[in-house]
Length: 182
Picture 1 (cartoon, one colour):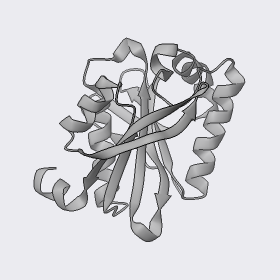
Picture 2: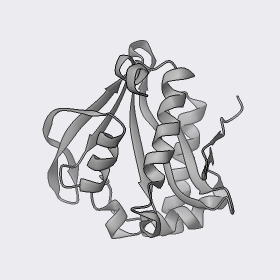
Picture 3: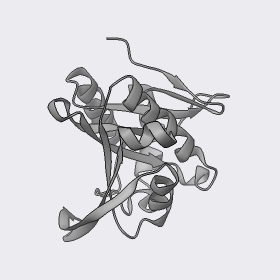
Picture 4: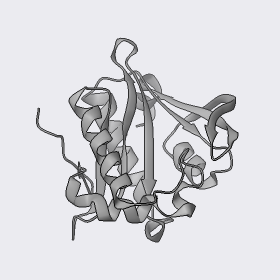
């Protein structure tokens, strides 16, 4: 199975490779990036290598797919985005994403996710794409709303992270709504 490469006007979404470990470590070791991510900041490059192994395993087992987000000009990983918790029998999947703080506020994540969502509905034939987000993550909430996701409710004390339980919001985008507005 050949890994799908997606392109936008500014971005290349490509496979995350072992050679991306330093860049991924730089992103996932930043406490501002991982603050609402459901994980502690990475402490070593080995943690980034384990994350990459997980991305590759998801693709091989068809339980998810994770793309490196890169600018066309240099192809260096500046973030990742993808599908996880893929439930084929229900045509349902969850999205996850993160971006280097250097690129926040430039519309990059909105552009990357729009392309990824298009792929999800047209190629993968998902009926529902959902996201669980920390209510304090205003940047992520804005991106989801811009892409047409609808808040469905609060998942109280849904995750245990960094010594405490976190509430998360459930957002979803249905294919029938995407077809009309996407």
